[in-house]
Amino acid sequence: MVQKDNKGKAQKAGKGQPLQMVRPRQVLDDRIRRRFPESSNPTRQLQLLLWGSTPLLRQKAGGLMYRIRSFFSRLSARFRARTPKHRFIQSAVFLTAGLFLAAYAAYQVLYTTATTVTFEGRELGTVASEEEAQNAVRQVEDSISRALGSTYTLDQVSYTTGLTFRSALVEESDLEEALSESVRVVEHGYALFIGGELLGATQTRGAFEELLEQVAVNYRNENTISIDFVEGVDILECDLPVDEFTNLADVALLLNSLKDGEVTYTVKSGDCWSVIAEDHNMTSKELLTLNPGYDIDRLQIGDVLTISNAVPYLTVKVTQMEYYEEDIPYEVEYVDDNTMWEGDTKVISKGEYGKSNTVAKVTYECVTEVEREIVSRDIFQEPVTEIQARGTLERPSWAATGSFRWPTSGSISSRFGYRNIFGGSSFHGGVDIANSYGTDIVAADGGIVIYAGWNSGGYGYLVQIDHQNGYVTYYGHNSSLLVSVGDKVYKGQHIAEMGSTGRSTGNHCHFEVRLNGERQNPLNYLP
Image 1 (tube, rainbow, N blue to C red):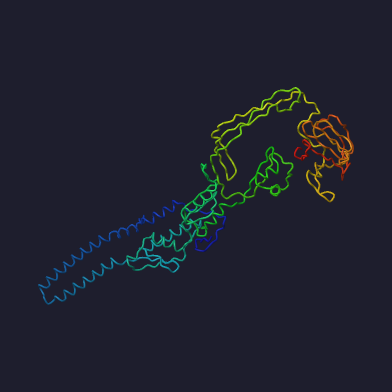
Image 2: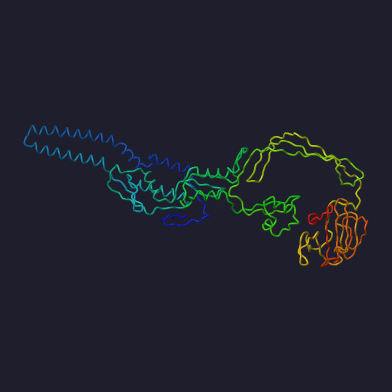
């Protein structure tokens, strides 16, 4: 964008310089001034008074001419009566005086002294005085300076003062308009701002309103209450540098594109990596690329994950009515049972969800729900209460707590899942925790030992604990065992020592978790 300093020399304004806008009120003031030529300048007021008095002056001049002709006519008659020989002289004098007066009157009516303004070798117009011409130039310079945000000077303007036809004169406002069109440094138009940032400008009235409606129409349906934009959207009528005017197609692409900006997600209870990725239309690998250094198997509540490094230029906020069938949660009633451990429950009669026809007012930002207000709920099926037995028997030390602890200390040398080993691919049903020979192995939770001995399937010396809740844990490759089948062990009890027996490449504890006989990923259960 090229601007000019006080000496008329071009300067470049950086993109970071703020754009000082000409507000619609300023533009309106210019328009009013151009339509109404009145001025507070005393000289201009006198000129306007004389110009408006021209018909009266013409009438007075005609009356004066009539009286002069009458005077000369009477004078001529007297001369003719006295000296007939001087009639020729009298006629010549009378004719000369008449011609002089006629020429003077014609000059006053048809001609005047005025100033012609020339820009870059082209005449733009003639005004009554050089003062008017200079004032018109200053007005154009001020208007351009406000639009550019810096001083702009017209240095190719020249003034020529001389005799000219009165009919050739133009108003000062007409000269301003002609000069503005010739310079073309700024143009009058409409600017679109998104969040305070100038996105583009056009000279077509209503064009940006149509573009915004095209963005919103994709979110509109028969249940839509309102559509707005999260970012501040302003369309201003103003004067702008010509290089700010853009193609409407480019503006439309920007409105539907993304810009730099981080979108995050805070991990909540029950979240896991793959589900978070799926909920945001990503693969686990793509999510890890945006969040390097995270252990996907050990997320912590409160962790903040980056979901995207880009945000929309324009975020559509839609409020609409939604009509749907909704489940109504059932209540749970408990019956004490002294044959069950404290904290254990068992379903006696299963509960059933109720059903309702629900009307809600829901607000979305793009496709993300941000607010839901229930307007009405018509229940057509009542929920059925669930009855559960609740244990009251004091829990022994060896009873399962329902959660697992780490069976030993060390580093994970192999994870759950498929792995390449011995030249092929095999499924690894647990996690290997490596440490030095003889490191303590403890029970991950309370339960009853159902196996303690050598296993020919590759586990070496193995311990299995049934936790009496569907879970069984395995502890393999031990160097020695400290429990026997039938022993009741509590959570954290020392049950074995680390070794490298069976199919093993080093000292470690192979730890498995099975639920109803199915292998589970132990890292999903360990804190």
